[in-house]
Length: 436
Image 1 (cartoon, rainbow, N blue to C red):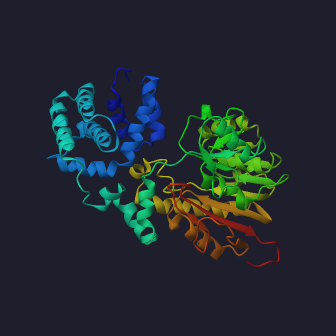
Image 2 (spheres, helix red, strand yellow):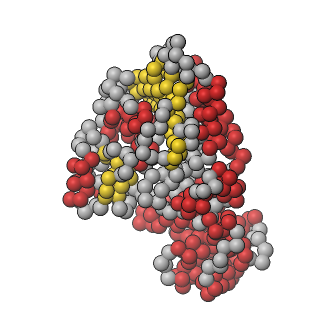
């Protein structure tokens, strides 16, 4: 791809790749490499914003087109979505948006459609944004997701959808092996970075606005990590201690692995598994920066015989693959990538992991089941189903100030001023002779 490709044309190609099934984390870096470094933050903002408001923008664009564009011209549809995002949600001058989008259309080799692009966008700028006519447009989420959330959470569904459309804050986890949270807050203040303690995570700090990690005091030396407050809560129930043997079963990119080791003062034996060999180096990079040690294995955690040495674990963190519907505000492409038909297969994977890993937990040990989903099908119903068949498992009482008690774990909803959506349940294995 030429470095001469205009910014909006590059963004249109990224949105097209997402619609075809690639995540932003896959296709955005590849496209960013074709642009000058100064333009890369703008490309990211355009792509994330267009994905966040895709369903609203798409409803408007389709209402302004007399007929859909041909399949081979679909990139022009995405180009107009990018322009509409800027018209509706940016402070860019409308004339610049229109003129540069027309030029981007030509750069994409679609000169015959430049007049259409110009006419549609001029009408959109002149007439303003239409009132959304459907819930899909109003909340800018796929219809199936809206219906599912309305059914699962009848009192919270609309707040959940609105929260998903607000950009998430930047949250840090202080490495208390290097200093206290208060010490780090002082260092941030001295660096001119406004921040406050998180409400629930003991080592968390939320920044008033995001900053490049290079500006964070001591980041390169491992004094802090970027991690959402909800994800930091994993250690509150796992309670890692020096000398314990702990499994992080689905570990990449390693944030929770490192949090476990920090709490245990790097004196626990931590085994970190991930099914993807490509993701293990990222875990090691985090461990190295924080000066922590863990044993990494590539393995399907559910296939216990392939990786387990037979020595039981004191604690297991099982952060299962899930729909990621609790972190849409950080990954808005989930709205385009996830399908309703994904949920049942994911639930079976989650249940299979839980059943198989339970065999590796020692009596008296605890297993923390976690997801970044807000669907009960992946969360409380998994735990309920497991407890019905596993007679030596006990659900630990939810004596914490965060989340909503579902009867089978705690559900956190995305909070515009705080944490992502997350689910936690803590199971303990009964000693021989005990009954649950």
